[in-house]
Image 1 (cartoon, rainbow, N blue to C red):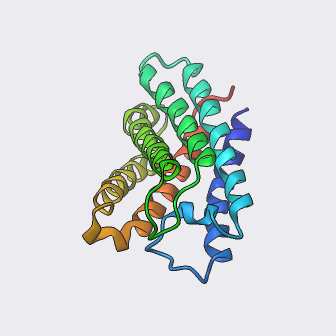
Image 2 (image 1 turned 90 degrees about the vertical axis):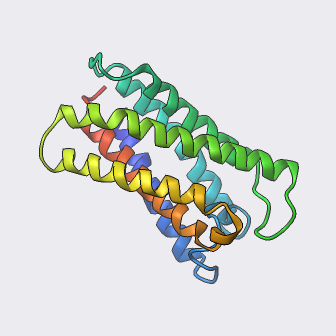
Image 3 (image 1 turned 120 degrees about the horizontal axis):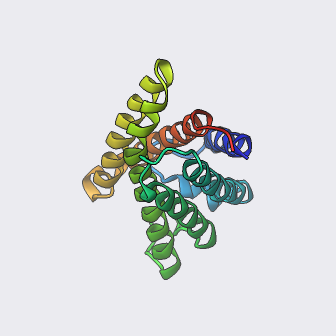
Length: 193
C-alpha cells in the first residue's frame, strides 16, 4: 500500500508540472492552482484531486501501524483532514479569478484552507519523529522540506491580502510542490505496511 501512496504523491508532483506546461498561456505566478480546474485541464484537475484524496489515508495508516508510540495521534487525524479537504476542493469548484465570490467558491476556499492547514500541521508534528527514524540525506531532507513548507504556508496566508495577491500563485505552488515531496519522502521512510 505504501507503494501506492508513494506513486500517488509522485503523480501529484507530475500533475502540478503538467498543469504548468499545459497552461503556458496563463500567468504562472498570480493565479491559484485551482484555476486549472476551470479550463481545458478541468478533467485532469479532478484526477489530481482524487489522487490527493487516496494517498493521505494510506500514509495515515502507515503512521498508525509504524509501531512508533511517539507519533502523535493528531498526525493521522491531520492526514485524514487533508484527504477531506482535497475532496471538498474537487466537489466545490473555485470561482474564476477576478469574479465575484459565490457560495460554491467559498466552500472551495474553505476546503482548501482545511487541506493546506492540515498538511502543514501533519508536517510540523511528524517531522521530528521521521528524523528520529533515520540519519543522513533523508533526515536532512525532512528538515529542509519542513522549513520550506513552513515558509510557503506563511507566504500563502500573507498573499491572500490584496497587496500581496499577485504573489499568491508562487506561494501556493511552492507549498504544494514541497508538501507533495515531503509526503513522498515520508511514505518511503516509514516501515512498509
